[in-house]
Length: 292
Image (cartoon, rainbow, N blue to C red; front, side, top):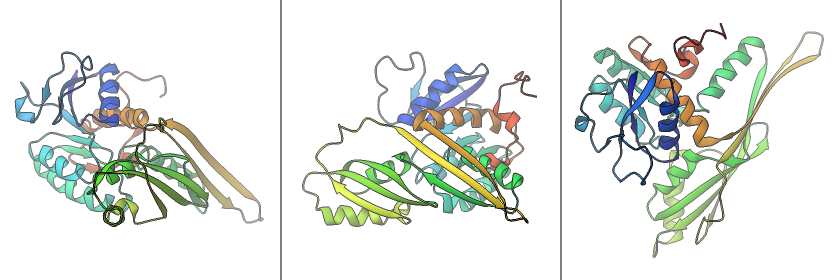
């Protein structure tokens, strides 16, 4: 059994921990977080504030943190010789993060797997297969309707924000509108909060409506949807189309994929990878041969 450390215990961290606990070849050796764990959850699992508090180093760490903090955290673990898996989702910065983590991972002779959530991650693999199938086609990705965990967390980390929830609404042809509900800290001017949110790299692209509210208690959904379409026009003018759709519980799918990423990262050569660079077989437990 490989020992996996869970770093962060929000919605994704809890889902990743449960996925690891259910895996036949992995076990949760600890949870690293600043606050206490809710009573009754993960009994017998050490709760630590630093990896040095564990009886022995983990075989790998799953980083369940907001993307803005994830690369620095990965650097710390990789520098200790501990492989990492994360779901970093700032698409434009993935090459930069991959290069940074890869350099340290190679120095320490370990591997890192970044951007291993559902998008980027699972959907990235789907796009690769679609492009291989229709090499002269065009791909359109429409997200939503659903809640974006990354955008919601980014807004919550902005100055003056007490709570936030971001909905993604598809406009078609790869365009999206986001509606961000914000509960402000008492006494914080809305104009300052709005300016802080707009400075976040999460909100650089697409249309955005910011709505201020007193409570987000009426929102219970955590689902998300995506549709990826690749279309190729043939020489005779006819077309062939590949469609991929899913409707998911966002944290659960991300947690499951991070569990698989932690398994795979232990089998990879030193360096940093994204999910589309990993042989799919490595995501499965040893002995899962029926698919082959």
